[in-house]
Amino acid sequence: FKFKLMRKARVLHITKGFPPDRGGIESYTYELANAFKRKYDVHVLTTHSKLSSSDEIGGINVVRVKKIFDFLHAPINLPFFNKIDQINPDIIHFHIPNPLSELYLLIYLLFKKNQKVIATYHAGIPDYTPLHKFFSFLRHFYMHFLMKTFDAVIVTSSDYISESKTLENFKGRLKVIPMGVDANMKALPASKLKKQYKIKSEKIVLFVGRLFPYKGVEYLISSIPQVIKHYQNVRFVIVGGGEKESELKNLAKELKIDDKIIFTGKVDDQTRNMFYKLCDIFVLPSINRGEAFGISLLEAMSFGKPIITTRIKGSGMDSINLNRITGLSVEPRNSIQLANAISSLLRDDKTKERMGKNSKKSFLKFFTKNIMISATEKLYHEVLNRRDLKWKKY
Picture 1 (cartoon, rainbow, N blue to C red):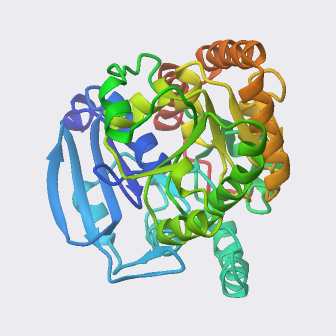
Picture 2: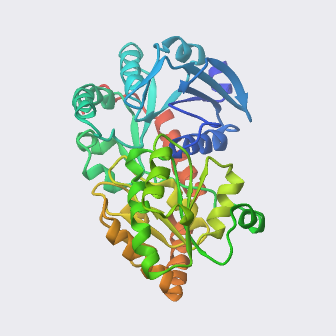
Picture 3: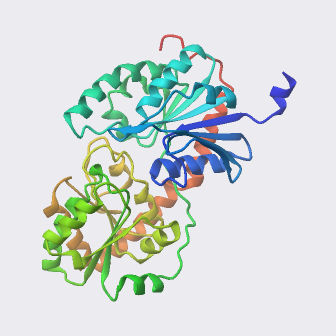
């Protein structure tokens, strides 16, 4: 008992990926784990790895569970109950969505009723196909029981709560803590980047993210012919890789605008930051609530850039991008509206500059990493010191 009091509390993150894996959830998990590694004994268990491994990354203990295969973008792997027992966490921080791991965690918690658990509900599962809808329907039942086992649930925006059937019955356990990124991200001068990609005096419209179906990048590409009718001196830069990359490149060729687009593929953080610094406008054309928040928006805002987003009911994008203040908002899947929004900012430097300044101010007020970490630490402290009441009827 004395040892228990003296040692650091042990925190275990369970998530699909962790750096060097890339993505918004991966970045979020890393920032929290890295921020708390001095105060807590931090471990991370990932379920989306090609190989099983155990190592240490900058003072963070990382256990990677080998996936057998992917099904509907979700990793399928064997149960990892023994891994949790070996780590013996004081608190589990679970990251949703991760469908099979959600079921495994529910089974585990049925036998570990005193285990303290916080979840971050990043997003639901997009219904791309009838098969997705069927499994989302099944998942809804066990998610209800899993949510009952959580001491607290972090959601990144209040907008997401109102449109989530999973969250609506657990409002008393929800804590809105927006994601945040470093307020002091640096970027080297972009001269090398301009030379590499043969960028001269053109204005730059930027997208950064994984090239997945819910990102809607095909609508951004389809908007380009309309944009260049009104503004010729522009290049579009698409940073990131993913399953739709070849399809998007083919679309650019079909539209005969491939000379206007730079596909960079995956890049390192320094190169990504140089593109943020270089760009004039940042666009996130997502088409459904798979885009629950949009951490790339915060990164662009930290560099003082105006942003263009889509209006998706229940997504946090509308709480980040204030229409006509920090940028512009258009209907999803609408290339004409997207083209009009891009063209209007390209032609109006005064408005573009004003929105960029507002974007930076809003970022510093609401969306920095320090704000996110401070609020999350307070929640950890509350849960670790709370009496165990979560299994009583809610």
